[in-house]
Amino acid sequence: MRRQRLAPQTGTAFRLQKDELLTVWDPEGEQVADLFCFEESEPFGVLSSGRSIDYNDTLFFSKGHRLYSFTGDVLLEIIEDRCGRHDFLVTPCSLQMFRMLAKEAHLEHPSCQHNLEVSLSKFGFAPTRLGTTFNIFMNVEVDPQGRVRVGVPQSKAGDFVVFRAHRDLVVGLTACSDEGTNNGRCKPIEYEISRGL
Amino acid sequence: MRRQRLAPQTGTAFRLQKDELLTVWDPEGEQVADLFCFEESEPFGVLSSGRSIDYNDTLFFSKGHRLYSFTGDVLLEIIEDRCGRHDFLVTPCSLQMFRMLAKEAHLEHPSCQHNLEVSLSKFGFAPTRLGTTFNIFMNVEVDPQGRVRVGVPQSKAGDFVVFRAHRDLVVGLTACSDEGTNNGRCKPIEYEISRGL
Image (cartoon, rainbow over all chains, first blue to last red; front, top):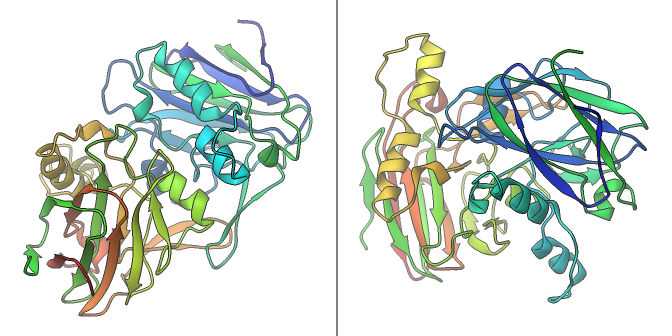
């Protein structure tokens, strides 16, 4: 597959077979991509931040870390990481969040939640099962008191992350829709599926 | 309702109406209780650690913090907290986890995951929707590098937490089954539903 581009504030979903690699680039820098995935053949085979934090003993994931499902199986392994800071704590931006922040009950705004719901539902995934996403390039800072703050992404133009699939998966991926998370401007994301680096 | 006791390594589920209070005690000290909840009337009305961390800007929840669902609505508010350290990062202990830790593929062991699945399914909750629990009295330490370690619970005998329901809920609650999380011995948990303190 040739390298694909996600336009700003959009999302997609696709199958990723066991042992295939998924590379996700930030072509312009300071842009987040939310990732979610599940196994079509296993009802509990859904990405779990809680299992992944527990089994990796870390909040911050990079090369060598593994993303687990609720079965305790590894879904994805990070095999290369040219940024080094990603988030696995928070849920995708949502229309409800934008309305709350803007204090406008009828605001319309694209969101990763909506983009993932639409994209993953084409593969039979119930939108109610979408949980905490792996937020590539998202910089959620945690201070010693446990206070959380969304900082500017540390990714520079051309930075990328490579995941290896440990199971046959469906992957949802977005170019994050939240201006605030992406240093004021929503930008594209690029990705490619391959068999080797 | 009179104060109820959960025997060690067991769980339960019950309805908690809007404005009712749920008090959870650690009668002997150093014992964790995993809590999960959902709205019967709203498919997205399921407890979300990711939303809650995001909207409270904290990893560590105490008095005044609110636990959100995927709709962005508040499900529970912590209105009293005599311990001060709880966890909202990790998923419940599971049979798969015990087997992995013991390196015994056929080990049998009670677990919060199983106890919550059984208890919540009596209210029509699909076990596959169980996510990261609010782990009352659980002490997950986070160092400045984001490394995570399960420490001894900070709760002393008689410590308690009080939650106020903001919606009509079904609540699942356990006396955690993992010896390692509970300083070597699994102990009981007590709880009560009331209309006021």
